Image (cartoon, rainbow, N blue to C red; front, side, top):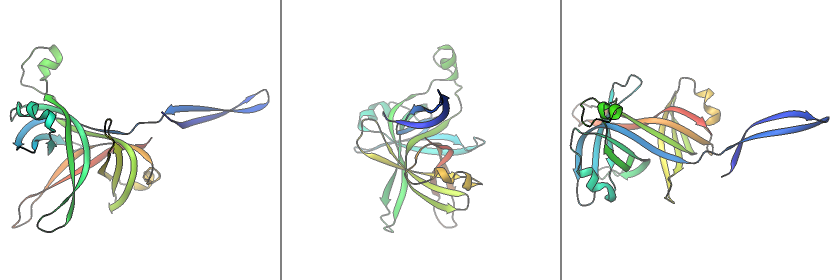
Length: 232
């Protein structure tokens, strides 16, 4: 693995200057989603299996966000053994995919979470004592951890920047692109890090907003909202 120079110091040895360089391993590309919440819906067909898990998001953890998870064929049997209302844990990968609206022909950018492992979550009783059963569970959550290169940035509005990150996943030769939204009152402080080509790490969560328009169906908007970001 290549190393990235993070620090250098200057010292004097026998009257001559000597530069000491401290190197740290470069941070590998990462694409990981961690979800724990209550299973509220299961959809299955010969071609597709989808799970919907409810999590609580936002600064005060009071914003319900339903996360749709694509189940690959190798996990289908395990997924169908779960019951609605079960509290489950999922680890997966996150990406943004482009779909075309059949009615309008417009391109839509939507998120996709594909499971790599899933299981029933342990209750507090089982996690703390090893005794099976129990009714109390820890707080639900969804966390997205991404490390990769910035492919594009765009200012959505004042204080809001859309970041497209190019990442990779172990065992796959494909690149994964993920869109994330960064909200900041003082974006100038972060601007030096938000340069196309920079290698960054960001942590965020998928948040769901419901928009109701008069005479129209409810529209569900999903965004990956950044809670922490740093160049690495």
